[in-house]
Length: 88
Image (cartoon, rainbow, N blue to C red):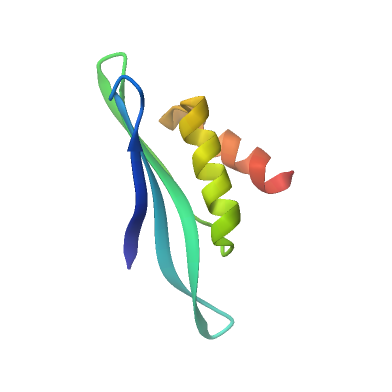
């Protein structure tokens, strides 16, 4: 089950950013995880990228979400940005 906790559009409304909560099973128990979804139009083409289950820490996910929105990250670069964030 997925639930959008926060959503925000880019300044020019061409891109929509979402902070997504998912319920997964970890070690036999249910846990909440957080991820990012980006949907936008780039060079006239609809693009969508999402990385779910990035972290179980809501505060960390919210920091990543704010960073992505503020930097206007595109769907194409989401994976690289999320990897760098998690590995830092």
